[in-house]
Image (cartoon, rainbow over all chains, first blue to last red; front, side, top):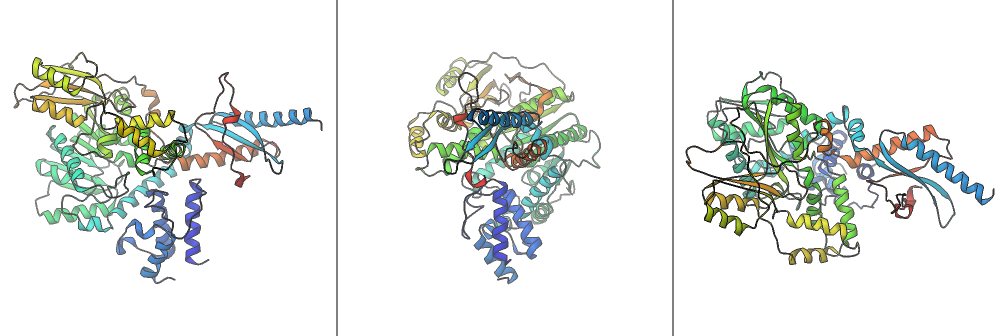
Length: 83
Length: 522
């Protein structure tokens, strides 16, 4: 599974816990739109740190970096050179 | 099989499932219904249950789940300090992570500054000398109060936050030798001697606690380390009795004008159920007196300030006084709510020593309360735009708490407000006391009107944070429970949790008003 599919799956899991079955696309905003909470954001941050070795203490953190599948794709490309 | 036998079989399956479900400790009420798919004719058993949220709190939010929640909030605070806002903040005023629920954007500097300064001003009135602040964060209070104290111990569970605080202290370049900073979680009082502080501060922190029992543990620790005559200041507490108007206020702000009120109502309920923070009724703090005899007196008052924010609308400070010698409480007759002009005229013309007024309509949240009430009684097909218009046309009857304080102060009165009655409309009580000698401020305690309390049922005075997710866990547990106790043909495959079952006028469950199950999961 490539990283985009993995991130999509992770979002799907977060939404399922909240009983949210609405569809989403790669550009759907999750945190800035309020669809997912800051508690969910932490779950995602831990996933990104553990799975891809991203260190937010080093690169800085802003919710917009992880707000959508696309934003995370861009983060992984810029920070870890993962395509 | 003839139709009569088929009907009998169906009823017996429903009843068996209902009986099993009603024996589960997490269920208060339940009904099981057979739904038939109009297209295929397939029938499936669907259970509807009213959950016991106390059970959910006890079973799914305790132990490891509680520890995980603390870790999650720690990480949230760490992350707040890795962003640009924290890096660019000036020493003594790092408010990174303070975002508005309305706009989801950082709260502007001015209201934040007022919020800080008014909290500091209130704490100063108690002349604290030895402070323990749990959850000191980036030092918004510590950096203002520590200079005036003999000793200030600040603890916080976020290493990133404490690192930023230490950096600010270096930048300010003063003597901070009376300050000790410790990285630890809130319930850890290790190393703090009994009766060693005169003031304990927990400001805007309790909402990040995983449960009310965790807060209770922290308060127990605070009672141990605070000296007789000292106080426990629990500030900026989110009010449970105002959770519904809060949710209505936020959702109404965010909704497009074209949204139907039916959808808005759903969003309000969803926000309440999805609340991630600990939201507490003032009654909890008042009831602590029965639990802890060292607590002599409890004051609960709404947050003050000129700025209209979610803090000044929906939050309060609770002050627990320990073993303070009593001069006898001030017992006053409370008048019914008056208009601001009438209050001003009374104070000016009669110049009384005291004036006490109860149930003052709170102008700050009057429209939020009205919006909630209209949502409950207006047709679901009406729109958010129409509701906004109705609210705009409405004349406000209430008085802003800040306005009433300023009025009293201008006329030479000390003004105290109280939310001890814990009204769900946010109305407040007020006492004006004439200042005879400004060098000798009046400190006599007031006997405020207050709600009936039950110290044996403290859990009812708070929500269960993250309830929506925890309810999903209960659904799975109940489906497993049904599967274990019923044959496969009798066990419902879907379960919907409801706040209450809809009833008919003759006291039967109104099956026609039950929500239609989601066909995608059947």
